[in-house]
Image (cartoon, rainbow, N blue to C red; front, side):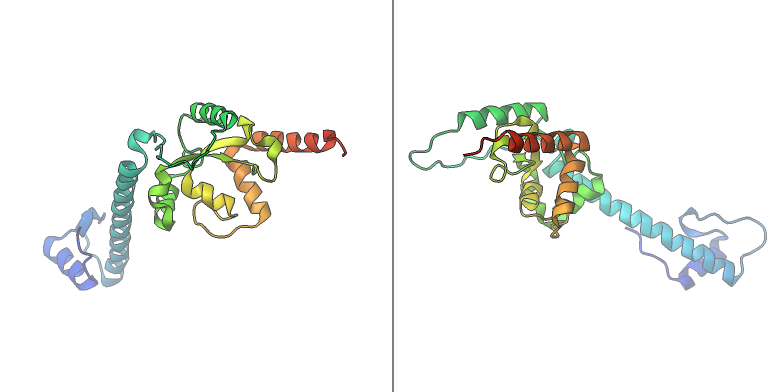
Length: 213
């Protein structure tokens, strides 16, 4: 990586070679005065800063590709979890998971909507290896809305970091705490407003039709 020249070195380079470093444009003919040179020097610094930032982002993107998005398609890592004795598999939930994974193509539905920069931010903010573990996540929690627990429409594939953040009412990228309205807005953005409204309607209809005990 090239070191940034100071103004004196920049000026010396110009007067020695009759051109500016890093191919900064310079009209031929009349020599530049100090004020003009300072303007060109500022452009030179900005160009180096952008180049440095681009190299940094490219490096981060390469690391993300290696760790998370192999050929832009991240497959689910199936962890081996020891089951307690007497554990009974929930067959209905297994069916829902299979439907959701196939429907969502084993991809995190949040990360596919984000820019490369935002995906890098997830790693930087503590996502680590959790971004390469993909869970079936409930949009409306199964505890508060059990009627939607087995509804595939209420489940999407999310990376485990963002899934955990949203479950705790935190920003799925930065991890910062968010309020109820922001939490709802994030889900609506991730799954689309039409789908989110459809789920709300199911909840309302369930409450209306729920038998009174």
